[in-house]
Amino acid sequence: MKLTSFYLRRIIPAVFLICCVFAVGKDNPADVNRLRVQGDQIVNMKGETVCLRGFGLGGMLHMENFIDGYTANEEAMREGLLEVLGEDKYNLFFEHFLESYFTEPDAAYIHSLGLNLVRIPVNYHQFEDDMNPRVIKEGAFRHLDRVIELCAKYQIYTIIDLHALPGFQNQHWHSDNPTHVALFWKHRDLQDRALWLWEKIAERYRDQPWVAGYDLINEPADPTGKRVFPYFRRLRDAVRKIDPRHILFIEGNSYARDFSMFTEVWDNVVYTNHDYARPGFGGDYPGVIDGKFMNKDSLEKIFLGKSEFMLSNHIPIWVGEFGPLYTGNPEADEMRYQVLKDQLAYFSKYNASWCIWLYKDMGLHAIMHQKDDTPYMKLVSAFLSRKDSLGADAWGTSDKNIRQVIAPLEELFEKEFPGYAPYPSGQKSHIRQLIRHILIAEALLPEYCGLFRGLTDEELIALARSFRHENYVKRERLEAILTGREK
Image (cartoon, rainbow, N blue to C red; front, side, top):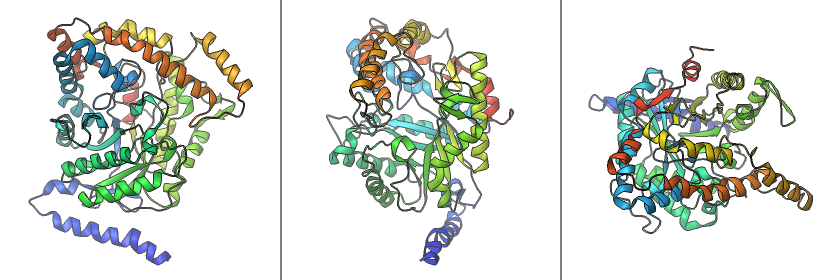
């Protein structure tokens, strides 16, 4: 059995790779850049190891509140803006927004850093309508095509990441979930729709060598843990029938942390974790956080726990998301930069590819943040302060100004329901989710949408163009760390 397994996982893939190299020919020189898995490495068709390193392009084809400035979830925001603007102005704004968000200077900048990857999160709503399912919208692929082609021009690989699935694959806003329930895992039809969409994506990009592969489900979170592996098998089989060559990137359950339900290792698959280090969100580093001493060794130990499946099976590791939040306080941010440097050091130690979250945002997380004097920032700056004071965003805000509301609820639940520990993160996190990030966020959303009321076409275009590359400031210290200029 061991010999058979060795042949299946080592010899056969190697023979396949050799055949691919000879099959490329002079007429298809770009195919040498196509990637696949060989042992514990990602390689191109010449057999050269390729370490993928780059950014997640959140905020464009999948929007998030802290990245783009609104509150609550994307679909609710879009519904609100449609009501305020009307269909024509709504379409005008979003068309210019999508045109502006990633342009050739963005691809050139990433290439200049010596990085070679852009992970492109997409929302299923970009491709189909819930009231007209299994029908691809007109022009649905236009901007995804454009980003992939721009990146290819600068020798940057792309990974297509389905970040929001029909019915929501996890419990939080970043799957465009307006609730706290991941309905995707409860309904076969929702699962069938996602499978159908991946078939359409695979049909379109199966011959694009600069697409490194398909990240099938971002941060799945099935409370039972029993439905993830069988569904990934269905996705794998469906995509492979259409596109047998691209790498499939498969994330663990519980937000890309748990691989215990994976009982097989599949050919040409990279299993991917997310490594958000707790000290990157606050507290002294090194130091005691939440009752535990945290330093480089403890962070590495946590990472190894998330990576045990990959390491024990001698297959590649790709860290699909990681990265600290920044405060503007030099002392606090210095500790967070050290967290980042320690993470990059152990990624290198274990030959892990990586993709830091995030490329662009409003100043919390990304390497690029919008200038204060853009039309968009002038419009929303007061609103950003208001939602921050109310702790409406799950990412990067606190409840310090509304503790008088939250604390009594925490005390009540601790007293009356001591054994209540809802998935995925327990009692206090659940209260935050329901009160701050759903209830308060929903109540704030009309204020955001109201900022657009009465704007002219020219003003809407100016707002959308605020998201162009030239209207952003780069975080130079982060750049220095990611490029290796600062160790």
